[in-house]
Length: 67
Picture (tube, rainbow, N blue to C red):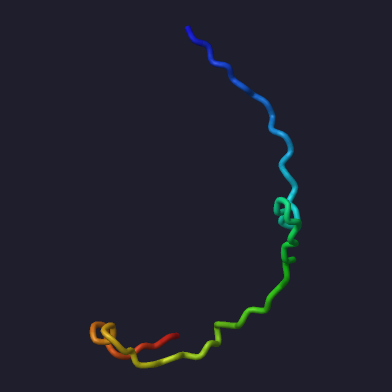
């Protein structure tokens, strides 16, 4: 009968995150730091209406409303 060897070792510590990219034989490039960016309020966006052109307008109608 064959026997199966079970390897039960614990893995080592994971690598730490680095704030730069280390390119072999070319040096390091720092990553950009996190920053908060203001986003527009889209809840009060104005409604855009217009006229479609082309084959899609012929198939699906000639006007659109982007709300």
